[in-house]
Length: 144
Image (cartoon, rainbow, N blue to C red; front, side, top):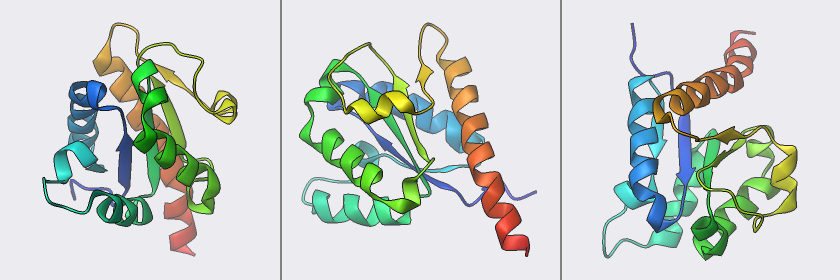
């Protein structure tokens, strides 16, 4: 069985949430998802804006870690705005609440959320199930 399912997921997060983002990335990768985490994939000297744009174009879904720090991050806010304005991310933007905050685009309240309370493994499993459900229509569309 092929270990990858062909779905690339972009994880948007504040620098302070990088450890949590890496743990979620690892969980998703074990489920066969290809994960792009700018903090891991990009190196000093890389053109971060260009490479992030390429990764967003190549991604099939976005997971955004919501925290007070993410709400203040211009990069995270820009990535959210990109996803909200892109048809490719319609129904494929998944907010994951790391720490409660009210300072994020109001439209995110209308989306399906995952809250990380105490069990990161359970949150990762829920996230993988949601991403798998998102991926299913793509599989059926490709079969016709």
